[in-house]
Length: 231
Image (cartoon, rainbow, N blue to C red; front, side):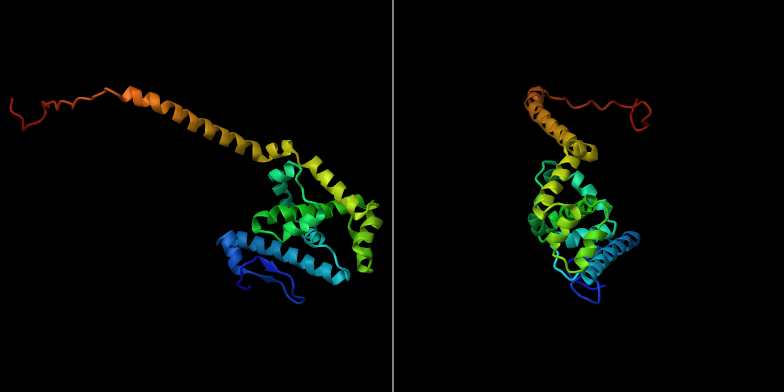
């Protein structure tokens, strides 16, 4: 483990570097959670290395990251899309824009990785075998990425881009967002706003009720049980 400011780095041919301080920052000192995250990260980075070893041609970043997500079995990432309002609204970037999102800030990284994984899953689904093997076989023989996509899916890359985004809009809708928990967040927000408004509306009435009220001091009654008092 090395000390640096990101989770992992795979641009070395003979090693995988996982950054200890980032793991501690994001996952705390829980040894079980740290162990699980290291396992997930190693699987993801090994998938990168295996792809780069097997494929001599250049592939787009979205495919590189999406394949690592797919090969590592990181299906839990897709849950992020159910609660992402941009995805629910249909504001899904095209594949070129997805490359940019993967290089953007950490706040968009989870959704970007999930989208990349969904694009690679769609590539597999579009092949009659429902596997990536035919595509990877062509790539390993030096076939151009766009040509390999067309030969294994029957779609040009531009056509695949449109079909992938259409499938996302069908799968992730307002209904899935509500069922995934977004509805509770809206309900909580609405109730909080109504409570604030009610308190603001009641403030003048409470102030008016308090006007003119004077509470006299309480008389201190002498207890018959007090031996210091004269009878």
